[in-house]
Image 1 (cartoon, rainbow, N blue to C red):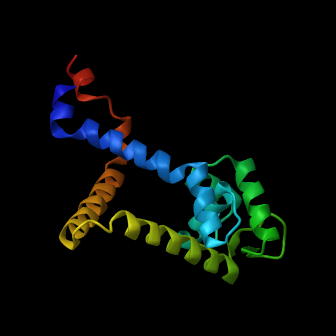
Image 2: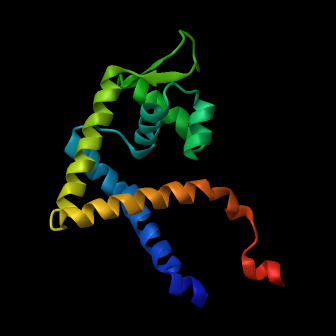
Length: 161
């Protein structure tokens, strides 16, 4: 445990967990949605954001790729269809959904709110620190994602026993 603390891994773990709790909190989502003028619940936002990044998708693929229950995903899709943010790819029930232009606009507005918030948070940082932080955070996320399959491996201490 001392090695992990000395390497900063525990401090980073704690900071990442706090960031994720804050970023994904219902309060934060509601504030972001209100500021953007996009009245979506957090489940609908997750679906809309995924469609924006990945393109048309079925409910089953959305649920799997967003780690959301299928029933929750269906409710989110129903909300997004009713609000005109997504459309069915084919003219039949339960076909894949895709972003409609109003959904693209909603994601753009939500992203703009987030970027403005980050600009305010980082306003007191000097430009070199901002650039360095962006580079380090990008590298951290890339490397963590690339090594995500190692989570299933037993810890080093357990292997030595």
